[in-house]
View (cartoon, rainbow, N blue to C red):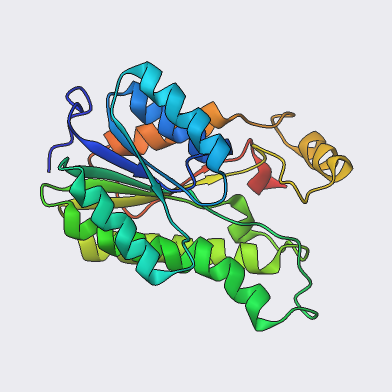
Length: 246
């Protein structure tokens, strides 16, 4: 499958969690590459409106799709809306995620499910639905985290879900080849989580070999690299300033 990023007009990219933070940056970057954008959001309605307005200024079509990724039927409905655009789906970026602080020994099954449903199960369901629409081939990018290989006791289900997402990436890459490539990007210290204390964040950044946190643009460049690299599938590209070395 030849993936021509110079002629992306009339091709669709679906980005989950695209209203805010990293998902927003990804959606805007793909719009600037000429993709029509299916912009998924759930609770962040006002932020979605602002992001939609920015994409419209770029001059490409944008299709807002609201869905609760914990609900299987809502995910199916989202892809019905994507199909109804009439544009070929060529790119899926599974960016939506939740990252609550939890205590592995003092939480219940709902606490577990609330993270796993969004971070892992929804990524699987979205990939399967997307594959049905990628008749001419396509690319799936999962947004993992360097935490997938860390023991973050304050975020147990988050790191477990991201470790699972990396395994899922390899499984999907094997099953969907040769027409659909599947890779993941694992950001490090890019954006401080709402539940991460500022002092803790600063302490981690100071320990990085590169001595500074990264930016959304660093992650976007990694995604675009994987999209353009026709001979790469089943890989996890780490963008962490050397965090994995400490």
